[in-house]
Image 1 (cartoon, rainbow, N blue to C red):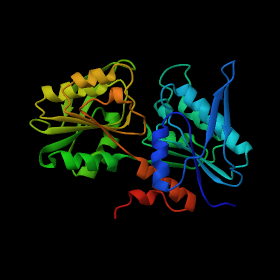
Image 2 (cartoon, helix red, strand yellow):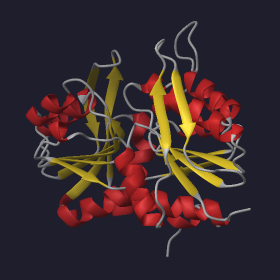
Image 3 (cartoon, rainbow, N blue to C red):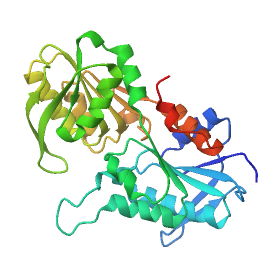
Image 4 (cartoon, rainbow, N blue to C red):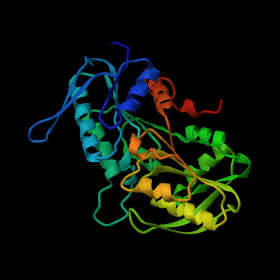
Length: 315
């Protein structure tokens, strides 16, 4: 067996894949993507993968269905080409939001996608900050679940006054995640009572915790429409908060979210590059941090059989 690992990338975020390859000291292997006249997808592996340890980087970004299909066909092509082990590197697993049956006659699509990845040929999955931790259990293969909390927290610690700050969870469901973020910064935690009216509309009530005169650091797993963050900022301001800083792992930023966030009483926004943020959406208050080094370290450890969990162990 050739012990050199190979990294391929789908079309969702080739820039991140190239950063990961630079950190690993390898060149990104070629992938031929094309469409037939009937719109069917064709994928050709442009390197010899026989008996090789292969990693495929593909985030489930818009258009998510196309990205997923592209990954599934690529996994199948790699399996057919006799790759020894195939790891699906999914920085953003969007269907983690479909984690439970909260209405009649609906699919738990997060589990369905996990099953499809296995069927297509994935031997393991490497992902980051799933919307719901229980989604980890949907997979019938090993999953390495990374978090960007230390990366975002380190940036916040360098740019904010930790002596007069509090971390805020936008609702009770996000309290565990925000609590980990608060622990990283050794800050207290406040929680906002939230009711979701629809996928794009939320209604918030009172703040549980002391935010009066304090800089509030809101942390979420993702920023999609921006509706929750905007309402959170308004609620905090009406409760006497000072500056409002918002951080998230996944800057999905769909539709008019950028315009909505730019007009909101939020001083700065921090996301990572799990999702590609085009220049048109990079407003002045937005900072994009790279998770390429962390992803590369995890890939290297998977390849060599070392512990991935030790990346987050206290030193």
